[in-house]
Amino acid sequence: MAALLQPDMRSARLALALDSGAISLPTDGRIAVFRPRSGDDLSDLPKDRVTVITGFRPDHDWFTARGYACATAVEGAFAAALVCLPRAKAEALALIARAFALLPPGAPVLVDGQKTDGPEAILKLARAAAVSHGEVISKAHGKAFVLTAGPVPEGWAAAPRVVEGGFVTRPGVFSADGPDRGSVLLAAALPAKLKGRVADLGAGWGYLARAILAREGVDALDLVEADREALDCARDNIADPRAAFHWADATTFKPARPWDAVVMNPPFHTSRAADPGLGLAFIRAAHRGLLPTGVLWMVANRHLPYEPVLTSLFRTVEDIGGDAVFRLTRAAHPIRGR
Image 1 (cartoon, one colour):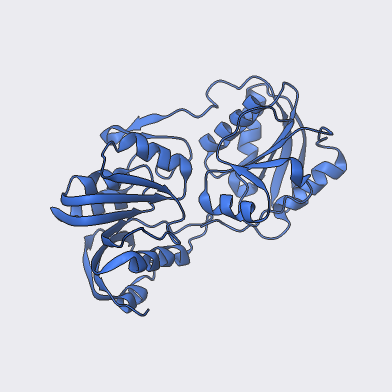
Image 2 (cartoon, helix red, strand yellow; image 1 turned 180 degrees about the horizontal axis):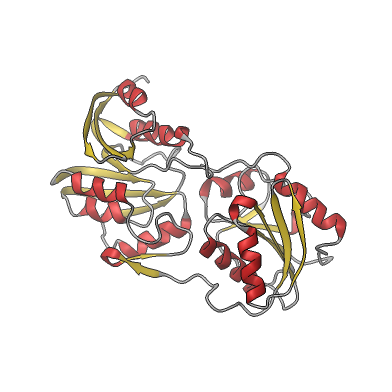
């Protein structure tokens, strides 16, 4: 699910940058807007020239519904770009590198982010790389500044990396440095047999999927992931004809046929703040997609208030282990009509 910025945060800086002359948009040509979030107001930009570039499915669908041209990747000529900073520094640099690659030398790239997104760190790296920049605008708990497109500084472009277990990851995907502790615990706790059709909701780059496919009895596995970059990594990591890859919001995904089992390590952040509602939406999606005899295998942080919803949706809910931080849960036999 996408994080909604408070109204006018990004748009306030964008409007100020345009009004003050900190950025001067060319009179024609396409404008690439990288990784805006649902709720971002882009109305100060000419809508008919904007292409929103995002691999996060809820954001992609939000902007598409409002009439914006949207893509996960683009080619061809652009005249200017807006880069909406993500939290991960490596991902932010990779987005700027992609913007530079699309633009002619000297074209403006407006970089914008909340203070918590690290715009100061990006500006410092730009200065160190001798990338020309303009005035820094501070407003609405964030900063914006214009970089001048040119050669991509060394080390900025996205590069895949191989982590523990031989998995390939890329900058910006969840747990890009290696499998997270919760997924490791869940993979170890899965039974030796998982029959029939299985789903991995929020599959990420495929760590749990590989563990699922190693179990006896799995006929098919749906990997459902909202982050296109992570799903592309999963395609690289899972070479099994039983695997089907779905770029989709797991909270609204509808399987072609019900599942016998769901395995998941649901996210619980839509921004820097915890959002238990996101994990609850994953639980409800698993409940909807399971057969009456189906089983949910889940890992989650112990402090999250999931148990009341689980017990209202499943006839059997068991704590099957974990550690001081993570709880492993087995929930079986969905209760229908809820």
